[in-house]
Image 1 (tube, one colour):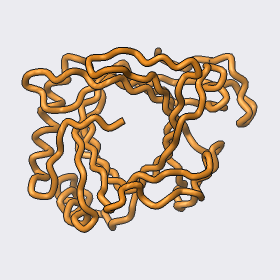
Image 2: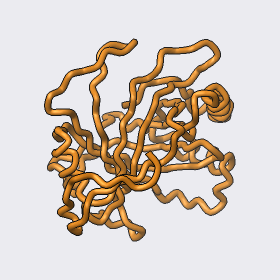
Image 3: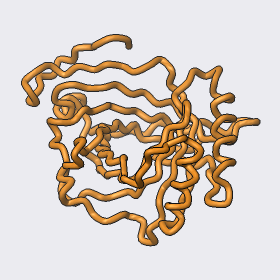
Image 4: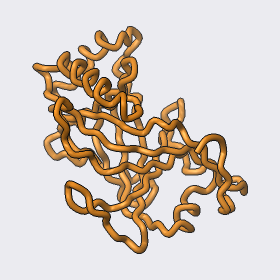
Length: 237
C-alpha cells in the first residue's frame, strides 16, 4: 500500500477527500512493558538521559497523545491462540501544539492503527510480538470510520515522556480517561489509583526475519534498567 490512496469519503475538515499514506511494509513490533511507582520516575528519567544521550533534557513532558478506539458495528471476535480477538481500529494523534495548548481535532495529524493479537511465545524470544498496520490520514477520518461500519468504543490520553534510542522507543506515561467524548478539557486524573506509571519499550517495526534480533536488542536495553523496574512481555492493548 505505497503512496497515497483516495477513499470515497468526503471530508468535513477542510472539505477534501480522505487520503491514506501507508508507512512501511515492515509490520512486526516487539515490545516489553512494566510499571514504576511515581516516586521512582525521576531516577528512571536520569538513567534514560544517560543511556539515550539527552543532554538537553529538562524534565518537561514531551508525550501528550490522544487515542480513540472504534469497534465494528457488526462485531464478531476472531479466534486466536489466546482466545477471541476483537477487530478494533484506532485513531491516534499528538494532542498538543508546540506551545503546549490542546489542538482541536481538525488541527491534528491523525494515524489509523490496527493492532493484531500477540503471537504465541516462541523459544529464544522474550518479548511480546504483534503485527501492526498504520496509515497517516488526511481529511475527516471520523466520518470515514463511520462509513466503514465502525462506531466509537472508548478513548484515552497518554501523558508523560518519550525517549528514542536507536531503533527503540521508550515511553513513561500515565493513562487518563476522557469524560466527554473527544473533549480533552474533561480529562480525568491518572487511572492508576496508586500513581504508578506505565513504561513501554517498543522496537521499530521489522520484517519477520528481523524479529529475533529486535527482540534481543530490546532485552539487552531493558537490562540497563534493572534495579528500577523489570520490563516483561506483557500484552498492552
